[in-house]
Length: 140
Image 1 (cartoon, rainbow, N blue to C red):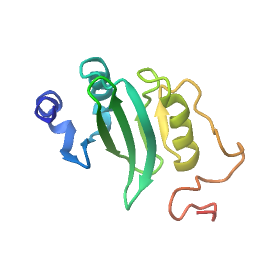
Image 2 (image 1 turned 180 degrees about the horizontal axis):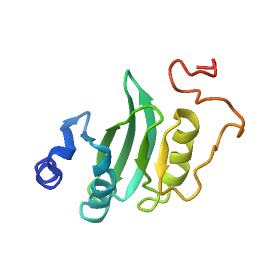
Image 3 (image 1 turned 180 degrees about the vertical axis):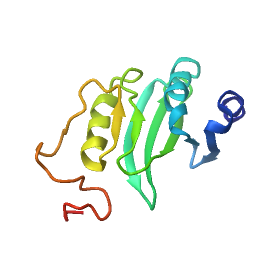
Image 4 (image 1 turned 120 degrees about the vertical axis):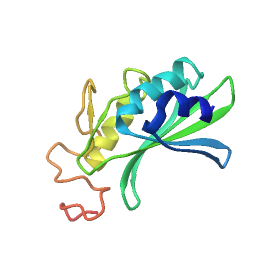
């Protein structure tokens, strides 16, 4: 699978390998939607398992997809700047709607094309994004 993805996505596939029983990919933000669409429609990764962000030390979004038919997991990592923008995956996987709202709320990332991007856990007037290290709200 990795070789096929390298051929298809070229330099947008920043890193690829296998670890802990799953395929791990790091992709450029512009490749996120085409990659996920390809994984779902051509490679049967039909079940979104997880969608989150982490700041360790750089900020990145991490997505795990599972193929029920193949019993395989792929983890996708996308580096993103603080306050950055990524395309929404809610048009490919409906469950991403809620997860993108959570990452927006807690990390301050914007998902372009999201149908209803607003806070999901914190009040609308909450200052900052509490899971960012050194958040100006003083709560992180």
